[in-house]
Image 1 (cartoon, each protein chain N blue to C red):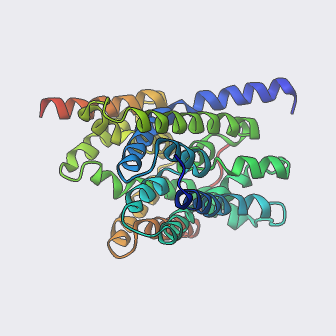
Image 2 (cartoon, rainbow over the protein chains, first blue to last red):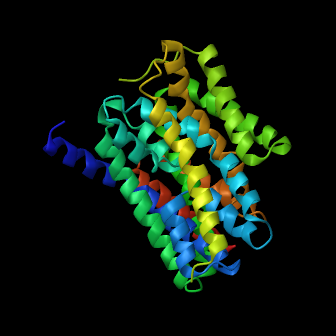
Length: 231
Length: 103
């Protein structure tokens, strides 16, 4: 890949990643507010975002910190993040020509959101610089939101922060739609998975339910259809 | 400003978050997927996103399930009409903002 090409791909990644900004800044603010309330200092709150970079886990840790021991939190974080094994496998599968050190570096930035955008973008547009662009937007907005929340938690009007709660769901839905339009069989698969996860999450912890439904329904989809990769 | 317990917590969380992300990167050169397996991997983004959306979207606001439903519906419609991603997300936020202000 030429330098020129890398730059174009990186910029495309930044562009494609913009929707993450609207989801991450409010979520990060929410996380930081909870973290401060449960006794973390502003510096600790921001450092956790810089090192861990996992929204749901940090939210959980911030909530649990005041009540439980750190070993329990670390174990819960591990379980919550097992789904990233699946996501990272899909992402790395699309980076076959990338060198190992770069892959290890990029794997730090695999989140629900970067994974979703990366794996639903046509494969011909996917490359390491493109992923790096997505991650740049995600990481920057996560840190910015954490800092905002840690220092000025009370400035955001309650109604606005409540409305921002829909942002990440809206992102996932908007990523799914064009694919459902393209291949109607996927609608069935999505409905089955949604039902499966709704039922499973009554019996299992939410993070386990997501892992089981994702794998189970993808397996089912593989058996039922002969979905050909587009392009 | 830094407490010893919190440093251990952050380092521990960093480790258990990074390992699941890095493992596939380390193994990716050793594993070759068969076509059936590729098909399976190609379906995972859709099932993963479906599972991330449902049932979580009903509890965006635990007291008002319609906040998640209507915001989600607005995102679905705008995306179906091929609006850019940013517009879909902003439209969903605007719809919920409206719901909170009016009702």
